[in-house]
Length: 241
Image 1: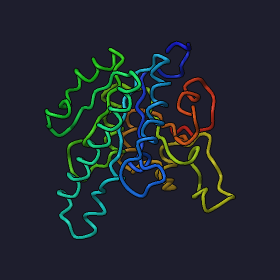
Image 2: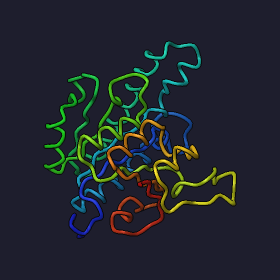
Image 3: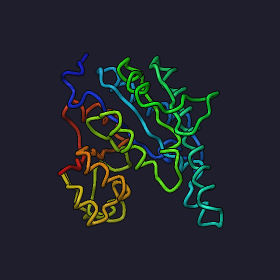
Image 4: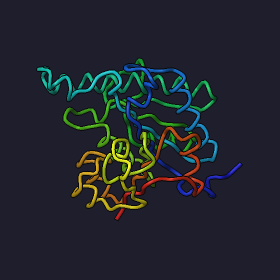
């Protein structure tokens, strides 16, 4: 087995969207897909890499969509945060079914289902090789789970953020609809912001830039892709200065 000393990073944060858990369904959770992603996380955890996660809630509820339909924005955002807790609990269940110790840590206090966010305690969980899933965003409306992921990665002293998507990196335009789209191997934070490349929202990119935190964009649909990048293989885009 590869040891963590052979891996490119020793502590990382994996950010995935809520939609990634839907599989081919149009809404909610697809348990086989949740388990497939859990196995990807398990394979990296087995390398000895410390892993934390942030999962979006868009497969259940999106605050911006609720707001657009006339709902008060802060209420809609809090509903979106609760959706992320549901996704985190589903991922925890799958990981524990694979024998991986896991903690769901919520920015909104709900002691019956998740631990409250206490930075030093979360760091200790990572040191004990438990996967930490940070739920409920930052606990504040108007902040996305992208920003929450960058914030938590910075607080946990992660060495990189892995952004799992449906494509194998960052392109200059949508590769699904544009066969001539160009993929970047490396792109700067400022270029992502200037060209609006859609890696993460602007506040998340700016926070990563300020903390010199690289963002690695890769395909979550590629089996073994997460582990492969840590072993120095695979196709991906790295966002850094």
